[in-house]
Image (cartoon, rainbow, N blue to C red; front, side, top):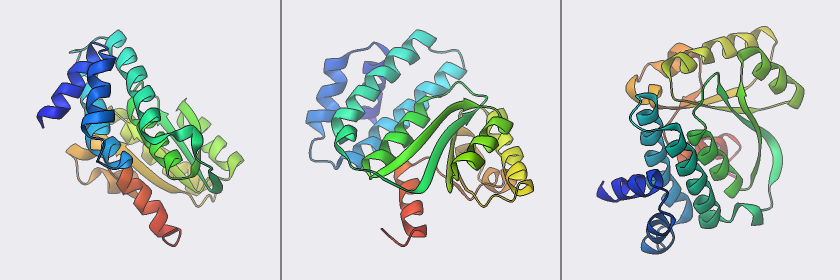
Length: 208
């Protein structure tokens, strides 16, 4: 999609006016969550993969992410939403440096009225300990590298050992490239779409 290429280019050169014109004005008739799901999330995934391959610099990723964060907040008005604290949702990345997907998923959940605990970058053991401490029901894990995605299997095993009934929702590039990876690592759902993750939680919670 050409429009995604324009957004990507704007983010990588930190052209706020260009990206804002597209996301806030050009697509103003598209529902906010659809703009995030169809325009912002795929572009951030592409930028993350390019950084992993050494095609863009860390400074470009940092500035692009910061700009995307600001515009997503403007699109959905995250701070104005009254959020529910049940069920408990948490999000994390595992020994990875890819915060782009995490930020988009977190904002999507918040905009829909869910409070989300952000654990940031963790190890397997740290993550399971925090999940147990906070009585997390849904654990969302964002990945970029295959090595990080495979660590989800260790999370599932440790959760089971500790008798914790937690729903794992995984996302990121590795799951798009391997349709069987979700089953291999013991996740309950693998998706590249924040909206799909949101709908999955809503359906499990009785369609609220």
